[in-house]
Image 1: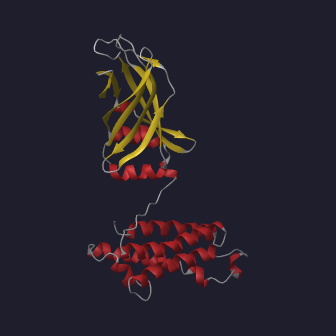
Image 2 (image 1 turned 180 degrees about the vertical axis):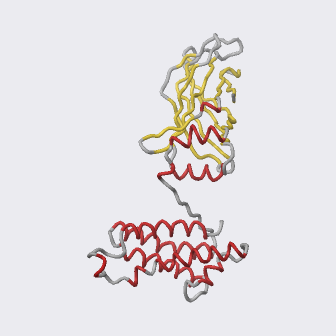
Image 3 (image 1 turned 90 degrees about the vertical axis):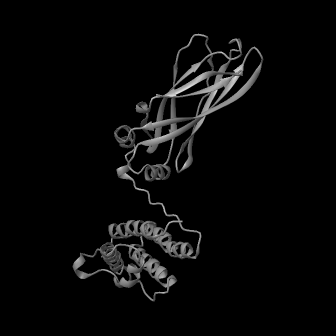
Length: 293
């Protein structure tokens, strides 16, 4: 059980606590969310406990190393009075996320326990003094065991049905080369949406050729693909080179296919499934080969 204390009327009289094994995942209309059943104890403030108040707003942020702050929440409006009798009341906190932030968090977690730091702010109303006060506390350190995180959080997010590819381009000439070439991939996405599946493959092929030329290669050859893994182990370099070259050769279906073959039953050889396959691979490849910032 993790706890933190907040001051009200000059005394640490607000206690916030959370049991890590009570953290769970929720699905909000297809978007991932975290669910925290927080517990609060609200004792009166003042040196002699003579400053009762009402909790009218509870808010906070989620942080994680090395991400920093990546989400926020707010529970309210409410009107919970302080009480001289110590007891804990439960507050159901839902933190809305998105798949990009989930991917970043999962990359940082790297298969380990999920470590969260939660900061909390409370807006208090003192009826006797007719004033408001905002108090802050934290961070509340919460470490969710990886087994619980997988079974009770990730399993509710249905991440297996949606994958996010996130590419960070370095702020350098090399990064600009990758960014310029990637513009062709974005063009291919528009062609896909318009049903121009053959042209999708052509645009993706040109993306790799533009990248090769930006590095001084005349074409996207096996030697160019191998150069992207210059510092890798020889076996890895060879297999990565062959994988990328094989995918690049698949993209030649686009410019070389000039319509329907008689044996194709009047169906285009480059189908929607082919174009989607090529787009998915292109996103994955650019994420893989783009150097870290």
